[in-house]
Length: 354
Image (tube, rainbow, N blue to C red; front, side, top):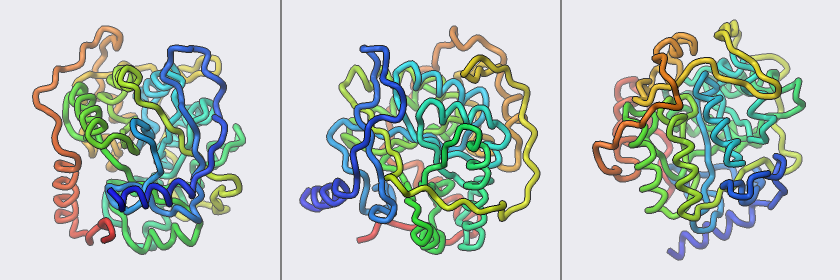
């Protein structure tokens, strides 16, 4: 406990309170964003207790929402709708090639006041060597920054390793470049093939056990998009508060003048646009049928993945009931991570320092 309080105190000194970026919430009964904190990468370069000693200093029942692997339709737009309905701000770790394929969705994320961060260009689910990692993150920044130019927004200096497969060489690059490597404090296992209701059960059980933290979700997962309104409502009912992370002033990342990895942008699938809002054209399946490989691309286009979503009315879908209780935090994730490394002959990922 003493060590935790010491770490929390240090982290608290590395954050600065800022006013909310988005407009004030018109719904007095909405969950809302309790406060906005700015992270200075020069002082807090690695956060998330799943891998590192430090994390952001949160009070009990404070939650940071983060979403990985997008944008992918129709799921990302449904996630945005749920966040908008509760006036909640989150951090989106975008994959560069998907950002180029769905530029209007990326700009909608920015217009809603969310933080936009870097999840590499292609989401390689391997432990990347330094050269490989630098190319992936530099090109990811270039792609996202290019898409954001029309709305005059810069990506945050935050990066997250695909699969949390961090390596010392790429972490050293991030420190040199003034970037914060953001891991997580807890998961909901939404990247597994589990029913939507199980995502809800595991998220709430682990939040209850841990008390607060950075929650890692995936906006590409149908189950997550489907269950998010219920999750946000339950957070509100139980008295949780949302904290929004943004960069400290003057810490915008330096964007390369050209991409380091030449790749032709994937053609975006047909979408329908509404005034100031991006509207999804396909419904969401409650069974969370996308596997982890499908969700992250894995050399499949987003359009191909979208074709797997059955035609059904989202408003009439009832989530599949949970068939098992919540598993201990990290149990399945650790097993999956170890299996992926062995399968690909990868080096060990970064572990928490003693």
